[in-house]
Image: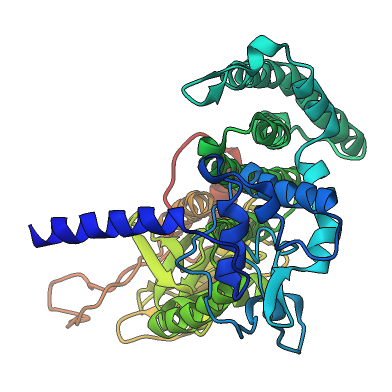
Amino acid sequence: MKKLLYLLVFVYGFGFAQGTVKVDLRNPNATLYTHIYFLIPDSYDVAKASVPIRGLPKKEANEKAIKIKAVLDGMGLVIDFTSVPTSANYLDTVLVSSQRIEKLLHRYAPFPIRLPGIYVEKIGTRWYYSKKTIEQIDTIYDRLFPSQLVWIGQKFPIFFKATILGVLIWQPIAFVLLIIVTVLLFYILRPIVLFLLKKNVKLFERKRSYQSFEILHELTRPIVFVILVRFIQIIFPSLQLLNLNSFVIIGLKVAETIFWVMIVLTFIKLFVSLYNDINKDSRSRLDRQLAPIVNKFINGIIVLLGFFKILTLFGVNPTTVLAGASIGGIALAFAAQDSVKNLIGTLNIFLDKPFHIGDWVVIGGIEGTVEYVGIRSTRVRAADTSIFQIPNSKVSEMEINNKGLRLYRRYQTDLGIRYDTPPELIEAFVQGIRKIIIEHPDTRSESFNVEFTGFGESSLEIMVNIFFKKLDWGDEQSSRHRLHISIVKLAAALGVEFAFPSSTLMIEQMPGKESLAVKYNTDKKFIDSKIESVLEEFKEVDHTVDPNASSLPE
């Protein structure tokens, strides 16, 4: 009940105050209120409203006062008098910081961001609209209300100038017509803009063979929307729908900002597509991976700038926005140190290029194929098809063995044969393996080693060191298979036996028993014939690898 009583007293006092409003120029609040109050229909008195206009004849001052009010209404700007200073000695700080003026002045701009050219200043002991405002108001008014539209409005028949519920009949009609014309323009402009975009891309495409027209369809829509928003911004203030202006104008500004962000993002997408088409035959798959990462990074910056622009449309000071962004950025950097490290690691990877997408690498004990390099981590698929996500900050610091850059696949093994193998068969076995390697189509015949290298605990050791030409893991396994089978056949043909870890107690001669010693055939003709037969069989067998056969990496 007490609150209701206070409300009644406030309403009565406010109404009484309105009835006793007088011309007052003692401070910015009083001057602006005098101008606006005496141009309201219920208290209309243009002579009193033009008092804040100084140094002009009465008639011209009246015109200036009306134009200032029309500009504010046309742009949907409503003065919040609760925030307008009431101090007679107010010193401006907003305009000074935005216009880089060092000296503080007694002046006040109600809309320093959206309409900085309209402001009041102190002259003597009173506050008037500034000389600069008086000089600029005609230009601002003509830009906001094109003379052609004003002339059309003046030529409306008397019927359309009648009012219903305080609204001129021509205003809702013009509003509906504006909507219809805007829709028609959309369908007219869209194919025209698409045609022009395709024309420009074709001119650029003469030197390159790529197709990116699909993205142009995405680009066409926001460009047309920007054109239509600009068209509405030109026409709408002339409708003088004061109750809607403040919402519509702000909405149009926000929409225009969003459409511009969409245009820039789509242009970036188009450039990335063109870049990928140009470099589609490039060997560096990591370079192609860089494009989407840079795309995401730039997209984030564009969206952030668009967000800041929208904040300024709602009256937030750009300096405040930048200061807040700087402080927030520092706080975010401290809170996300690992993310910053990973980002720096990503840059190092793309600068140093230690591997490419698809390379077989060993990174800190993790072995597999590089599938993806992102902003935060690198994805490696192991031989068992499992996925490892390694932070890029660690990748840039680890030792990387890039097996994908090998020219050949090296293969080394040791063959152990029995200790009782005769020297002639050892030499023949070694020579036979050498000939097999030379005849093998997948090995480097000019670079290999097959040597009797030493004496093991239970065998004579023959080292086989070769290089396979094919780098694919599956092809290498097929090549090994063919080599191994040939060596086994050669050993069987020569009578050479492979040893295995064992301890043998041999009694050379027992009374009435045959010797247990292995008997070897060391006849040279026999040995040569067996080697030749194995080689002929090796040459005749077709071990072609099926290209469609699936294989897992090592």
